[in-house]
Image (cartoon, rainbow over all chains, first blue to last red; front, side, top):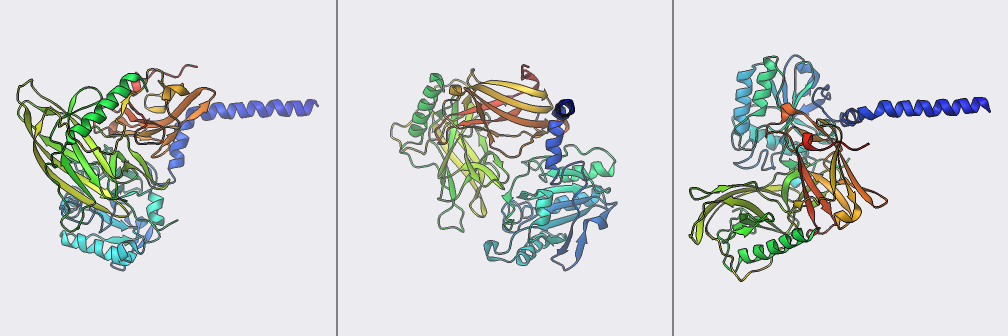
Length: 218
Length: 288
C-alpha cells in the first residue's frame, strides 16, 4: 500500500514537473513542430532532383555556396506566365544578375513541383515550359523537376514564386517573397549580399504571394 | 453585435447599393484572351460611407462562378487586389477596407477570399468643398484563381459624386469588420514577442456561433498554428480563442508589428466580423 502510494505521489510530482517545465516552452515546441518544413536557422532539407537538362542536382553539392531556390510554374501569372509575372516582367532576370554581382559564387535554382496533368501537361512538359520562360528572360537557370511534390512539401513551398535561401553551411537563411509588393526592395539580393558580408539577413522571412503550388495528391 | 454596429452595417449596405446606382460602371476591363473574363472591376460613381463614418471610393468586382479573389491575407497562396488611387490635389486615401472573407480551399491549402462579387472600400479624405464630385482614377490589379490563376488589371476613371444615386441593383452583402465588442477581452499569455493572444468573453458577447479567428499577419509576425482559422473553445458560458504567435522585430519591414485579424461569428457572409488590431505591448497580461 505504501509502495503504491509512493509511486502515485512520484508520478504526480513528475508529471507536474514536466508540465511546469513544458509550459514556458510552448512557443518553442510549436516552432519545432513546424520545423517539419524548412525553417530559418535550421538545416535545409536535402534533395536530389533531376533537371529539365537531364542533370542530377544535389543540394549537398553546393556546400560553401549560397543557394537561392525558387518554386516556379510556367502557367502561373505571378511566376512565369504573362508580362507582369516574376519572370515575364524582367524582375527575376534582374534578380539573378544582381545576385551574381553581389556574390559570384551564389547559385540560383528553380524547382517545379507541378503535378502531372495540370493544364494538360506532364510534369516534364511543364518544367520545359518553365525553362523556356527563363531562357526567354535571357537567363540560364536550372529547372529541377519534383513531380511527386516530396521536396516541395519538405520545404513547405506554398506558392509560385516562393523563395528559400540556403547559406554556405546548409542553413536556411531566408524564406518568402522575392521582392516587396512594389518591387522597390529585392529581398533575394539583400539576403545574398548580407550572407556574403557575414551579416544577419533582415528580413529573414516575408509573406509569399502567388498561385498555389499544384501538387500531386499526397 | 451592438446596436451601433448593426446600424452602421445597415446604413453601409444601403449606401453601397445606392452608390452603384443605375449608372453603368465607369469601365469594365476584361482579359482579352477570354470570352468572359473571370473577374472585372468597376468604380462606383458615388462615394460611400465606411462603418466608422468616413467616406470611401468603392471598387466593385464581378467574379465568374467557381473563381475567387483574395482577402488582405490570401492564406497559403494567392494575392489580394491592389488599388492605387489618383485623387484631386488636397485629397488623400487610407487603407483599403476588405469585407468579411469566405474560408476557401482545404486544410492543406487554406485560402481566404471571395466568390461571386466583392466590394472594396478605400477611405478618402479631402478639403471641405461645394463641388458636387471629384475626379478619381483607380489603377487596380488582381489575381483571380480557380484551379489556375489569371492576373487582371484595369485603370478606372470616373467623376465621382458625393451624393448617392437613388436607383440601385443590390450587390451580394458581406459584413464589414467592426470594432471588437467591449465585452470581449483581449489578453496576452507569455511575452509581447512570444506568446498567445487570448480573446475571451461571454458567449453571448460574440452574437452568432461558431466563433473563430483568422489572422492577417504583418511582416515579422508569425502565427504558430498555421494559416487558420483558429477555432474557439466554449467552457460554460465563456468562449475563448487562443492564438499563439511569435514576433521577429528584424523582419517587421511594414512598420511596428501588430496582432491583426478578424473574429468571425456565424457562417454567413453577413454575420458579424470583428476587427482585431493590437500592439502586443498594449495588451494586458492574462490574469492568474
